[in-house]
Length: 544
Image 1 (cartoon, rainbow, N blue to C red):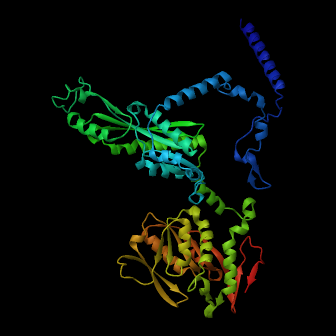
Image 2 (image 1 turned 45 degrees about the vertical axis):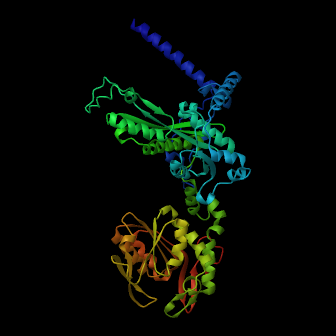
Image 3 (image 1 turned 135 degrees about the vertical axis):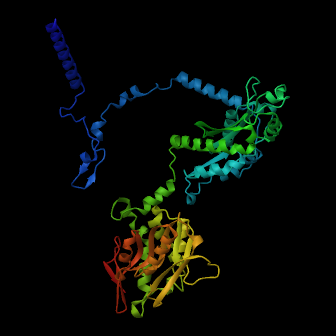
């Protein structure tokens, strides 16, 4: 019997091998097992070009017949009958919504005003990072929350219609989904913009007289059906406050009330619903609790639309970071090099044209940076220098009065952060200060820098900005002040750097990035020599 079993097993193996070989021949499978690819990065490393080539085997890995793609669909394509049925259902639903009579006086005005079309057709404010325009119809107190959440995804709301009024008694018995959908569709029809609309309901649970409670009810409560009954409102109005005031004295303090918000998004093709719910003991219940489910519903809707519409979080900031991180000589960075260094080029030319070398090799640029300031040039320099530090995310700029303010203030405008400046003399209002001393070659003596303690906190990310980097003495003093405050220094930026005085080397121990727009290589016999920055088309070194 064992011999027979062995023969049967051998026969089955032979048949199985024949079937495998037949399948391999039919599919023209390669004999070198090219289907067995590795996803490890070292298998894609190109030593010649010193880079990892991702998805190098993509073409081999995904050789399939596009005509067979439908075999992998979860559902077959919609048949004409199914499509017709969907249209009929949509028509029926639209017809049912047409019986709703709530209205917004402002929306009615917009529908009748010929100027509204241009208003709602205006482009989004790209200066604020917005790239799409929507409308809304939610409760007015919640509009700031909605605007703030979606602004991070580049959405600007043209207007909010929050003045809805019930038109008939039947409107009070519609579902919150129907009301929200009706509002969104109506706003879309008038404005032509995708719309987010809301409706919030309120419920009070009924009292079960058989339930035991640790807090005895008034004797009249179980016998009064107005107290024991449940209540439901499909809108938050004064009636909600009235019923709460009436029920609280007659109810157990832990009797549950529920606020439920429904948001509906409609853009003419897609309709999306999301919800937020808040259960509150009746003792603590009031209409202010509406903010809680609305906040939850807004964030849920944002998450849903982020996936459905491909919304990108802070896309404008990522684009600016990518633009500021472009490397000269590669790809897009090479083509935009001239515009990227436009301010640096202007500042270099101005230094060579109007800068002077005084005694003790002191560089005088007071004609455009100190006692007389070229504000347009400083604004352009502030824009370029701020781009270099944008991805470091500073929340405050620290500089020295007064010369450092000429570049610190423009940078603060572009980075949208406040400026804190260190004084060289104590003022009357400076009671408690951080203090650090430094030596000034220009003045020829030691000086002190003072910063009020309430201007810098341990949570701050400080960007130090100044006009010159010479020996690094003043910047080092500011670094000590930041350290004394327990804050973090994220970078140091200057307009002009005297390379020959090794200030950058003196600051290297602090492990913070240092950026300068123009670097002076040397000053000798009244002649300034500038370091040629990477990307300029001039000679390696230009002399005045």
